[in-house]
Image 1: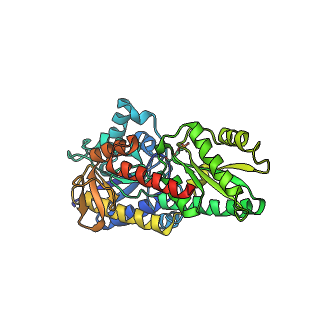
Image 2: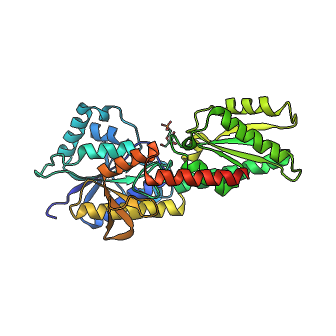
Image 3: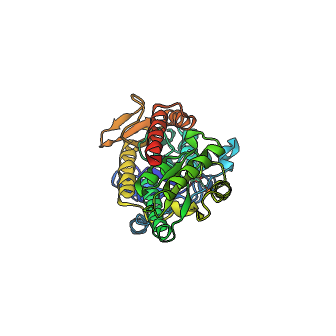
Length: 364
Ligand code: F6P
């Protein structure tokens, strides 16, 4: 490389633990490859406004242990418009970017696709790459997104704590966990936490059926004197409000078993924060390493995903730098994500099957 090319990095959309570890790895690898690595603040908002910072290795070392994102994140409304994208392209020219690495979810990858090929200062075209980061695990073409493992661990720890007090008082708890349209977090953490009932959007149950499910579980639990607690994990994607769900359950169960005491805990943003797990730090570092190297080799327009079950066959190619990293064109990722969300992809069907089987076992 003649003069150091500039690699821009940004984090966008809902933050996810491990984003900082991805930035650290992109900076380290990028610098070693001869890039000058710069960070844009608050995702596409910072790109539009030209707000950037030189990344500092020791700050990144420190940040990599922490959740959130040291660059800040945003869901930019302006970037969705043609005018916003034009302003971002002007920044790309002015700031002499040769490549851009976007860390985020579905919306963030859609944004990256809009910028691919934008003119650069030296008459070439902007190379772009994406890293999947979303605690919901709602992206196609990666078996895990950055942040999912930490969020799962946070939920399990919260459930364990709630179990202690629930058992002491023989109570039922409805615990609502994040996952806008995707029940992955609820289901996996429910299994890991030893929950009794799990409610997810994907099974498309009516409100009455959800209430029936909890009522049945409570009746069984109260029939067994050894059972001291009942844990219901409910995904945010299930639109019935958790307090209303509790009231509907009470209305059915209290006339039969007056002692039943049901409480609601909404974990909310607690699930998204916190120090990234070792797995998320490593996942972020490996994805960033493979993506940055591919950008350095002239590749563009791909997302670096984690290999594993459920990836659509033939959509991507293995990174020559890491046998666990698959590079898939962003267009394919977006299509597969849409299929994951509308339930038509193989992985969506597989998840629904597993969810149903798991639910049957939980109900017993
Ligand atoms: O996309 C991740 C996520 O945490 C979802 O689980 C949740 O529905 C959403 O973001 C919340 O976003 P915000 O913090 O903007 O309300």
